[in-house]
Image: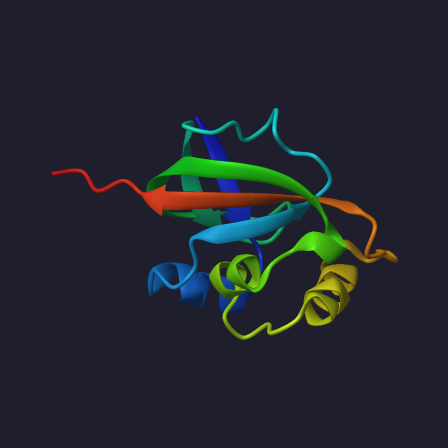
Length: 116
């Protein structure tokens, strides 16, 4: 099973409150996160201990240019980010490199799996 890891403490809060059910990743990640696959939703910084929150299913995987992200994508990614430009600035901090509106991103929608 793969993990869909989140590094930002703000994302951890959104995941725990179930306000986040989408992530945008730089590049084409279709082969890593195919639709209908099961992943662990985890939080933790790179090269540090991770904490498993819950299992989830990848519902939809979309490949887009950064500039093609919709308000729906942004809302489910992080309700506090209101524009593509804001997300681009956030991504430049995370990836520590310059990112353009023409760069390819993968939009991954997921849903929690509840075990009963």
